[in-house]
Structures are given as C-alpha cells and as structure tokens.
Length: 503
Image 1 (cartoon, rainbow, N blue to C red):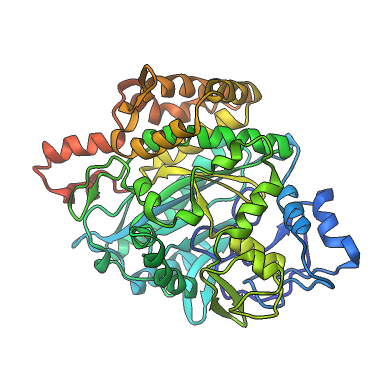
Image 2: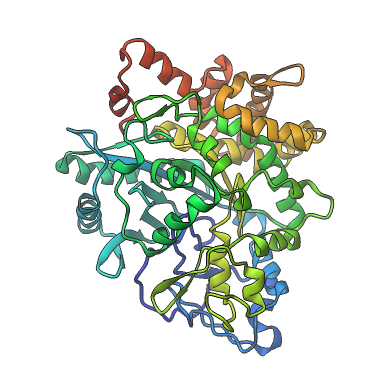
C-alpha cells in the first residue's frame, strides 16, 4: 500500500479504518489518505501532469494540491482504485456503544469521556486525536477510537485477514475500555437505540461537524437527531476485485440487508418503554434524510457501475467543507456545483479529493460504496454479535459460490419487495411475511450459505455464526427476547437492560 506524502499535523480523529487505511464514518472526518497502488489511482495522481499532496490529517484547504481541477472521471477512478486481488481482501469491523454511569444509568458526559480517552491513551499507548483543545479520539496503528455526536464510543478496527483476528481485536478493545471505565464507575451498553434517556438528556460532543448536522437534520426529516444522538450500530467493510465484483456484492448486500437487520434487531425500547419496533435504529433511517439514505434501487439497473454511484453522490446535498480548520456550512448545496466552482458557501473554490472523501461519508444508504463496501443494516449488540455480523457477510460476499447462490435466490425480488422488507423488518423481524412464507425461511437458507462460505475459506470461522443461529432457528430476534424479559421478570422496568447487555 503506497502512502502519499503526509504534510499536515493532526487536529482531528485519525480514521484508518478497514479495509484501506482510509475511512470516515457517518460522523467523523478523514485525516489520512492512504492509497493502494492500483493503476486507476495512478491515473488520478498523474493525469495531466497533476501533483497531489495529501494531508495526513485533517481535511484542510490545501490538503490536496492539484495543477488543474478534478473531473468527474477522477471521482470515478477514485472509487475504482479500491479494486484489489482476492489475496488482498480484508475485513474491517466497526461498532458503537453507549457509555453510562453505573450508579445513575445516565449517559456519560464529555468530561468523563475525555478522562476515559486520556486513561486509555496513557495506559495502553494510544495516540490522542484533538480538535482544538478537546480530545475527540485515539489512534493506534490502523485502529481508531472516535466519538459519535451523543458520545457513542466507536472502535473502527484495522483491516484484518480473518474473523479470528477481528474478534480478538474486539475483545482486546473491550478489555482496555473496561479496565479504565470500571475505575471511573462507567459501564458500556451493547444495544441499537438508547433505551431509557430522552434526546434532551444526551450531551453533545465538541466536534464542529456535528453542529452543522444538528442544525440541518430537522429540515429534512423528523428522526435525524435521534439517529445522531441515540443510535449505535455494528458494521463490516469489505473489498471487491473489480467493478463487476463490486456490483454483485452491492446487489447481494442490499437484497439481504433486511435479513441482517432482523437477525441483529436489538432496539425495542425508547424513553424507558417498548417502542413498537424490534429495530428502532433501522426505522429511524427511514425518516432521517431521504436524499442520502435508503435501498438505492438504481444499483439494480443494468447500467449501474462506479459512474452511476458518482452521479448519485454528486447530487446528494452536502453538509460542509473544511477550510482553515473550520467547518463551513454548505448544507443543501451539491458536489456537482462544487466541481464546477459554483458552491455558494465558498464561491469560486474547487474541490480536492479530500473534499470528495468527506462528502462520500455523509451519504448513509443501507450499503455504502467508498473504496470498499460497507454493510450498514445491523443494530449494536453484545460482543458475540459484534463477531457474528462480519462472519455473516464474509461467508456470503467473500465466497464466490455462496455469493452466486444469493444472487440467484434474490434475482427475481422486485424493487417493491425489497423496499417492503426493509420497512417491515423493523417491526416484525423474521416473522415478516414474504411470498408464500416468512422471512425466517429465507434467513435459514441464507445462514446456511454464509456457513458454507466460511467453511470453504478454511479458517475454521463458522463458529462465529452461532450467536445468530438460534435467532434463525426460532425466528425470535434479540429485541423480542428483551421484550419477553421486560414483560416478565423485569416487571416493566427497562433499567435491567443496562445489566443484561453490559459489556
């Protein structure tokens, strides 16, 4: 992997997240740009005699210096530069969790989070990531720890070869966090939506980007602030070998995302009561911002490829541009205008590749394309499920036989059926009616394909699926198990979930 000249000092989180040393989450900023040395990226770097200097961190006004403006083809080539041979495919897992005071169950305040981050840095040799005077994350090698808007604590793992390495990484992280947090009287909860506290009870983290998002969200949906402050997810990032391979994986990922949502559904409580959903977190995305979320029907068009995704992204409204260590509010404006030098928030300025990377991370569909694919449909949960989620997708997407069988299985699913599943699984989980049966029956077949795919990989990884095998066998989601406890031995008190799902 060739890393291009690093020229800037760090003042934001260092997102070296799988699988490419380069990653930005829905609420974080890239500050490193490591490219794999593929021909398509070399074209971006050398076409027209351009000279590129890429900042190590954070995106700055001169992070990428080019002798002439970026073109749409550069943006396409940037995505295509993610193609890599199968021997270089990696697994990158990310998860978020809620920190809370063990005594009061209240969310951690920023001051406590700051103490925790400093403690982890000093005890376990992590590098601190600052924004101004505030610590906002940590980095160590290709792993990073960052903060979501409401203080959700996120591990973005390194690009790893096997699920054993991935699960070991999660366990090591949880050990380190607990070692410091327990001394502070802090615990962490593995669930998809804040079960007890209202939005007004959640502190906001001191990151400039979040202020812009917080002001914009209510203009475009009713649930965007809940997404920012009260949700946690687990996701996996996976590679592709070619444009054709990307398309196959993208389609399989979108078609099966509702099954993943059901298998990992773990957010049945809001404000201390059942909310009518098994995955409130997933439901929230349906009314966050229609312009940047959803099931992307165009991925199933015959004409789909890198160029079509670029066309889509060019017209998704922007959030911000980062210049002179400040976030400039560009909400509602498009990258297409930026490409033409017509961005009203910074008139006459042209975008850099860093601007493009940042923009791509403000798009939130169920599967997201960057220089790899992100599977984004699952609720946060306890550690066994943090290992099961990447296992599910690796078994399907990294095995050619299982991938083809999934594509055959879902080939005649209509756009309307895919959308119906996406909407209904949030309420009915695996009991969602589908054609002549239930989604549970499809999930049984898909889980078998995932298991077969893992076995063919030859790393003895199929045991990681045990955490969801029982869900498929019974058709009862994790959320429904929590609801049984709530109506039974918990005697209608949601407080017990903080013990049940404590890491």
